Length: 162
Ligand code: FEO
Image (cartoon, rainbow, N blue to C red; front, top):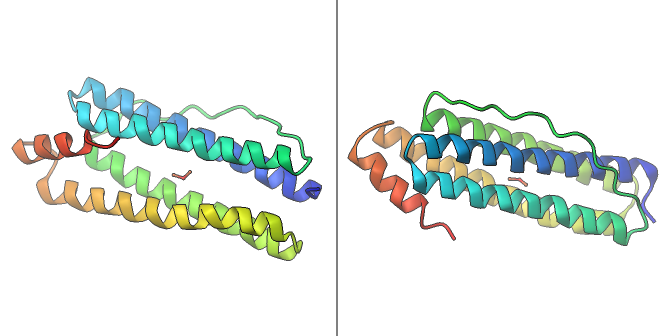
């Protein structure tokens, strides 16, 4: 059985993951208006992954006899200056999520909730990958600048994400 504190904290993480999904979907919509269809697809896939992260928590809370309580999701930003701003914000957002996951791990350790600690380790590893991936894309975008043929090539590359 989950403690009430852990249940509340995990529910808050569901909201953060759902906001992530919403944020990346908003970025995808914006990128479509910029004719960057590859990046639009990339962020649509990313959005679906975030919903998967939320649903994994949803399942876990249920499994541990807790109650999932869904809260309202904040409105994401609609327009962006350019693709560099999008990846810079994405990297910052992922760092924020990492901190939030680490706080959950700390709580699990404090509460001697070994099952939650074990469950959360998956997210710890996932965040290493998420940050590295976004850092890599941001570096490439900075290399090519926001315009031109190289950006089109990166767009094609981004669209290959399955
Ligand atoms: Fe669910 Fe991108 O962290």
